[in-house]
Length: 235
Ligand SMILES: [Zn+2]
Ligand SMILES: [Zn+2]
Image (cartoon, rainbow, N blue to C red; front, side, top):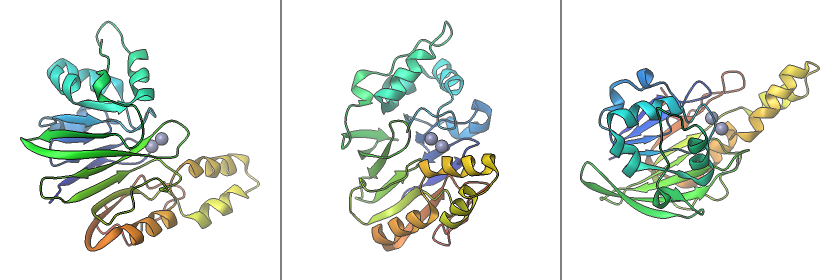
């Protein structure tokens, strides 16, 4: 069993906690993370957008428990570069080289609460470097995590026990809005094309789930979104 705690998802800030110990994305203020932050042992950052990484929040975690970042922060080289740029007198931290994903299909093991987990990364398609994760626990159960991508083409073709995947916009709504005479509406709709449509989310889930898979829909757009019936655990 995986425990999936979605503290925040979407453009207002992303943070998902797996099994109380792994934080995926840190796009909320320290206060908004709340108690969930207490037991965190590892942190994965997907990409450099402000709704996925808040450096002041990382800085607060670092002040409290520096080893969480020193041992447990994992990200791609673009995010590592971004963190370095944001360093200041109160926060001097560089992501350890061994924790930087140098290529897609990067494999590594972590321990959460004394239990082993195997992690694989795979390429996502956004306007900055980004990757998804396949997490396998000691019981061989698998969880796939992916957000902020317009394609799932590089995700490993397997059936997953847990799917935590973006379903951002309804294709009909975005097509209609992008044809609008109102330029702002049209350009807003265009921006959603960097994300995964709800239709693509559903196609992916259909092809990669088992009968009892647990499915979460992430990063639904306020303007162009629709809640999929597949996201049975939508909160
Ligand atoms: Zn985002
Ligand atoms: Zn993004």
